[in-house]
Length: 113
Length: 114
Image 1 (cartoon, rainbow over the protein chains, first blue to last red):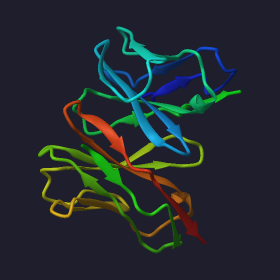
Image 2 (spheres, rainbow over the protein chains, first blue to last red; image 1 turned 180 degrees about the vertical axis):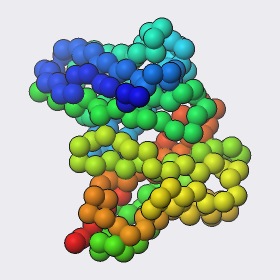
Image 3 (cartoon, rainbow over the protein chains, first blue to last red; image 1 turned 45 degrees about the vertical axis):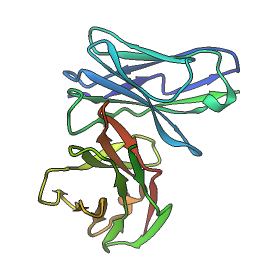
Image 4 (cartoon, chains in turn brown, orange; image 1 turned 90 degrees about the vertical axis):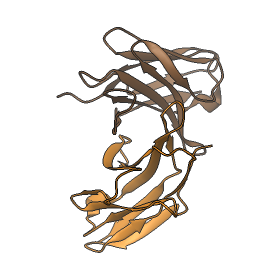
């Protein structure tokens, strides 16, 4: 069974641009969560999608948005990029919202110049 | 409010020795889950072990065991017979709250010395 895949793995953008990151969960998993990881703030929860609906949202500005498609694949979008958005963005999938495990993808390393 | 605390930023252990990584949590929920993840330098988070709040026995997975002390709200990870490949960041996490989302600690960097 293939694991969680994230594309692209690395991304370099400049301030003010926007970016879209993609996540394909493990086959059969319907819940996808996104996290931002930085050295200063650690792992911070962005949002969770289940059955194409956002179920949970962390404390991030509206520039951060996401969506989930009918095949459970998810995208997150960051508009008007700021230097502080440079981070490792991790996607995790689980079978449902109440499962015991989340399986993480390799992450997308975003650098904002 | 939900919170996970890991007070050890860095730990060193001799190869083949056992090591305990500390984790305390705070939640008013009766039902919650506790997790440990390993993050090597490659960046990918690897699930290690899970403990449910109603589980009476401590969870074990191979060389990993979770020392669950509910009254003290602690969920320490014990790694037995450390190996060089165990060098990584270790994160304690809790799934709780109305949204049933995950909350992560700040992590402990473990270095195994040959």
